[in-house]
Length: 415
Image (tube, rainbow, N blue to C red; front, side, top):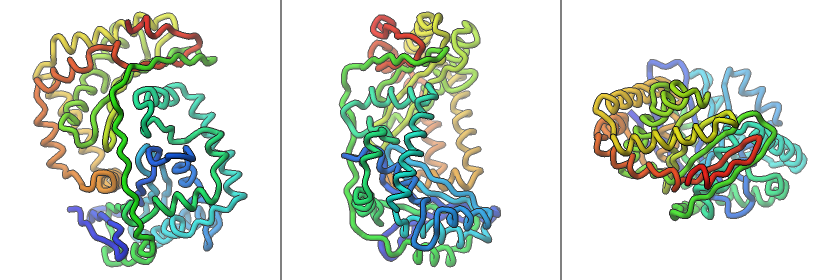
């Protein structure tokens, strides 16, 4: 059972005690992501890096050493909509681990010399992303789908935007975003509640109560965008993308299952047809990503250059076939069982439980129970899938991106 407790400054903590565990995971979630950056693109991600670079009490080396001597795993990540700093610790060392991460988030110095070094590190990270076409293409197709809205903002920013970030920019941004109303602390595992709450109050109870209103970032449907990026690589990476649905949309589970039927696993339609039967791609899949106010649906294939036309025809054929013929009860039952199994498997990890509870509380203001989620999946009908299949059947309405050793005529491919 998840318990919601409020610190003295209004910061929300969501706690799930798992007495059978020998460890616990704690995540500090901040409503600071790419969608919140009206300027200084990449600042949320840059701040995530800088939180590890030294406080008034610890150097960057001492932060690592203090956590590692406790056997604690620590990391952080930035998404379109949030930043999360998290530790996984033996239950016996949890309180000490929490004190270190609290020091990082409330006492970081943002030293100018460290900032300049870390800017260079992030530019190298950008290069690494661009060297992985199936990762970089995801950025490009998301930009195409959400062009003109904050969801198009690249999480990592650009070399120019990151180099332009000043210490004053960081202090102003954290002053607006790293405040009690825009933060959630999530914990799942085995812990002493009284000791944990005392540690959270001591570490985070002094954070400002200033509230910053969440941004709204629904994208209007717009004309499909196409781009073909030429790089010195041996394979064509092909992306189709269009609008999906938000976390709270009534079709969220139906779209999850539609994506799984189309391209979610080794028995999915795209995998069986495009890879197994026709041998046109090594990797091919479909998936949806939901955000607070919007969502996206993307199809990807890694294709030999000389087989692009055939592969695109095969993908379009599967979209049309699913729209024309629908899905049978057996196939729908199969993907429901796969979905539920994957969900339950994730629930066996206290880290996964912490991530889900913290993200949902921060972004949606509530935590969806296991029963609600499983019931939502079970409620999806053959008719729901048929309706979505017709909605997503027309590939010519999708945005498209290729990263390849040569340019491709995308309008002609998708006409």
